[in-house]
Image 1 (cartoon, helix red, strand yellow):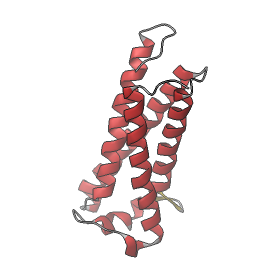
Image 2 (cartoon, helix red, strand yellow):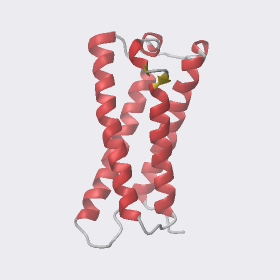
Image 3 (cartoon, rainbow, N blue to C red):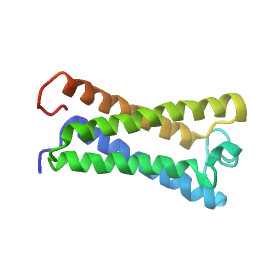
Image 4 (cartoon, one colour):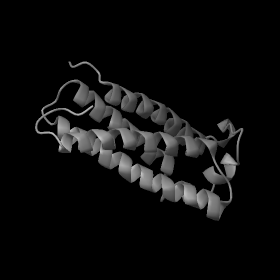
Length: 149
């Protein structure tokens, strides 16, 4: 195993926090009484028609994204041969997550007219991970065969 670099470590910590938030949002989707919201109107956001894709809560997709980023981070930490591919994969996942979070934030503000503090937290975490993974991806594109971070 390799030493955990600062960038990879930060990405992993943020992804674990994101998995916690997304796991909580998944739980409260099925148990609305457990929803705690001190800022905004989380209930309005969580019960809106935009809170699901088909029968699947949006939070499940976020949870899967965070778990994938954690898995890719563990693989990189262990020194897999496909390190660069794993880094780019984490960047691609979080870039897509950031774009989708921006769309959901737009819906909260302009369509639902309510803000969910947990959704905003998840969006900020996703964006932060995307920036970290983006820096690592662009650094590794500029170097040959070396590991970014």
